Length: 152
Image (tube, rainbow, N blue to C red; front, side, top):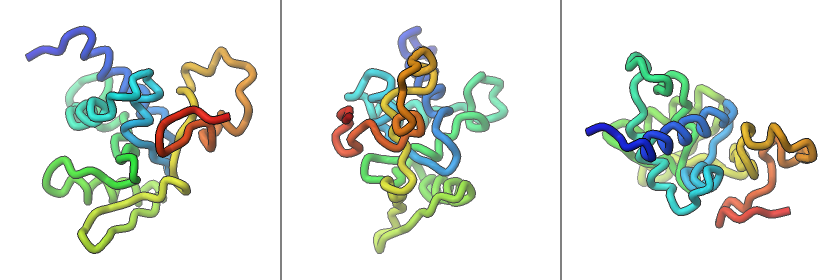
């Protein structure tokens, strides 16, 4: 079933936002939703990434140019999407230099205080903003990671 124009716009917006996450950093599904102006849609961000086309699909956005592995849940945990998916994501993050730990239940975690990327807005949105301070520009501050609110 083909996507509506609205759904296609949302999928593409999610993929474009995820492309901005730097190597060696992660963010949450909720933060991508917040950056896109839809803070109550983190699950829809996850659905978009679940349906990310394969690299050889011929699509503009695909698994080869959208770093899906850099998005984790709000607790820093890697979400399971199928057999072996969490392990595959953990390995992809480790290849980027991100430390991934596991607990006694076999869940994988990333330390968001160390590897988190939580800018106030996407790079494409702040190109016109000449007064962005360095702290916000590097993604180190600006949004409370727990509740997604903007902080000074």
